[in-house]
Length: 153
Image (cartoon, rainbow, N blue to C red; front, side, top):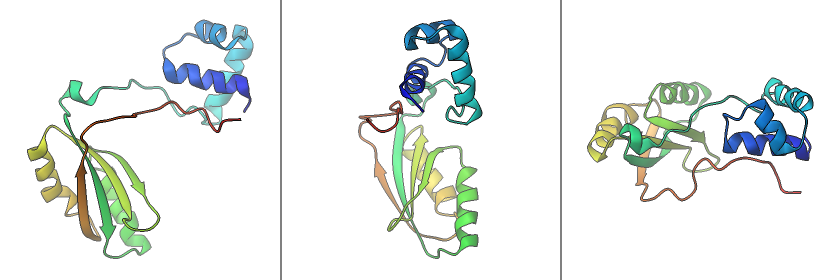
């Protein structure tokens, strides 16, 4: 990946609706080589897709919690069962397995505290293999969905 590929990625992360002509102008290429580079970035899954970034509060998701999960047991079957179950909960918008303690970090969006409490009681606490859930409420989002360009050179 060279500097032009990084410019393409930066421009598309800023505005994924750019036409190939607009993208070419932004990165300083003619349309044909820009289009070839774009297709290669898509083919190699460097660009994994295109989507709209929706403000959670615009769709009524005004409450955000970070949930730290400590597992009771960490055998392969339990971890896979936990991960599959978490993937089925739509309010979990991010899930990461961590080294050390805790074992997982979940980012959860709900309408309000009462909805979160119901989700934790009914779904999260019932996930396989859990020893402990620790929730931290998000007060303010400082950085969200920062564009990726790779390491500085």
